[in-house]
Image 1 (tube, rainbow, N blue to C red):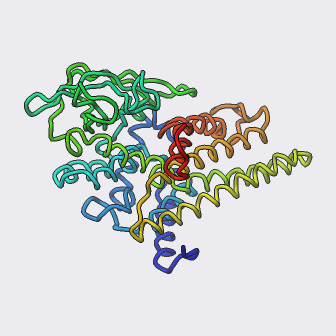
Image 2 (image 1 turned 135 degrees about the vertical axis):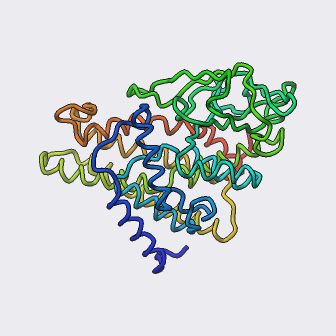
Image 3 (image 1 turned 45 degrees about the vertical axis):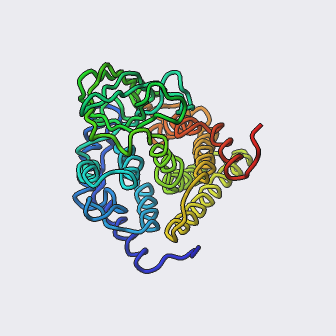
Length: 389
């Protein structure tokens, strides 16, 4: 791995840094998981798209810049370091998008990718079910072929962006007699499908970040099947690799949080010179681990650019970033002591309560994208080659 960036990569980084600093909003927006905030962030997606900064790593045909994987990682770093608004269509552009490139027909790519990139269609992920937990292969929602349509019945839960999204990508059982991984298919479902009922589910902070979805004889056209019928598990694993590895959690997010943590420490130690040495060590560990994750991701990116594939390694990447995220925010809350419990709007809240809200979100990291317990099993069996019990 080359540890130095070439002149084109440096110029690319400078260009995105300048554009974001000139165009990002100055005011604080409503959370994207409220209806007003959702639309504000959708408008930001359109602005990014018009400047070709929505999906720079995509082909120009779909609104991208054909940039390299290294350049995309630099883009992610600059984006998060700038403090620009969160991306409301993360499920689409970082999870479904790469899956469409690998498994979609040309017609599906032309239909979905441009509207995904410009924010016209925001996506939710419909995988988890009430009785399935982390065992995706045990899902029960069915989609039975009836002429040119599939008739969908069942329930999904913990659907990120599900309260407001325009589309949902779902894993369904197209063979009701099948078991486990067999008989699953990957279906793209319009959010306005007749018979689809959405029930918002609030996070700990009260925002409806998720939704339960109830399918009651929903008719979805067969042209929305991604991959072959029965190939859903293979298609889903392509999405899961993106969710656990580079795409969903590029290092920029954690680098920005670690830098903020260092600055918080500098400010706090001035006010409280007797601050525990243990807190200092936690800040150092968090910063070093964020840098370590960065270099590990760049190494994986180099491997991919040379023709390699990211397989089960995505599981230990997910373990690392999910625990790092908690450590960064927990260190900040320990440093802030009782002030760390103040939420947004409180007069003395540090950084408008973002450390507490960030910590609450980080707690979900070891659960979504496959629980860390499952990821450890994958690492043990498929990376380390350990035998099953």
